[in-house]
Image (cartoon, rainbow, N blue to C red; front, side, top):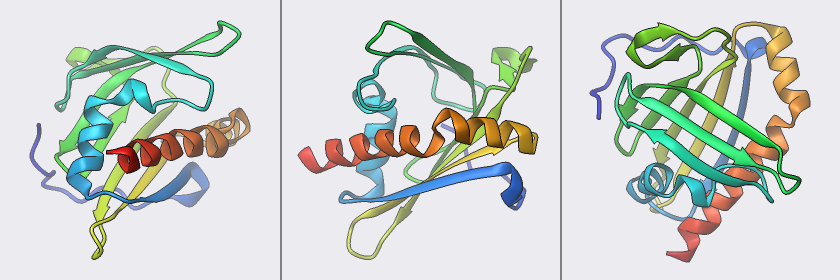
Length: 162
């Protein structure tokens, strides 16, 4: 796990970012634990099954999953964690591979923020930052809102079952 960064993150540039949030009936520590320890149980839209092939949860650690659709099509995700602040924030990107090797193609940086609400719940915000408007538009057309929304709904349901 890493410590908080010493510099403030870049302010969002809305024309390059997509964002979605959910209020989850569990405290941030529980939501963070489910995010990090139960990823296959909620990662991916409805109908997808997810296999985690690498999950080295620290800055520079590998992050790899393979989502499998009902028709057998597989969708791999690869990248590294940039920042991990327990119960507060997880940032990963596909711009690098382990060892800070530049990835041949990159698409996004994802930021998951876990905000404690006064009533013991968590506001989970997921942001996808893109390098161009074209990439943001492509991601939205790929189904960012329904896909990421269904994933967050599954995470919220998992939290509610505990």
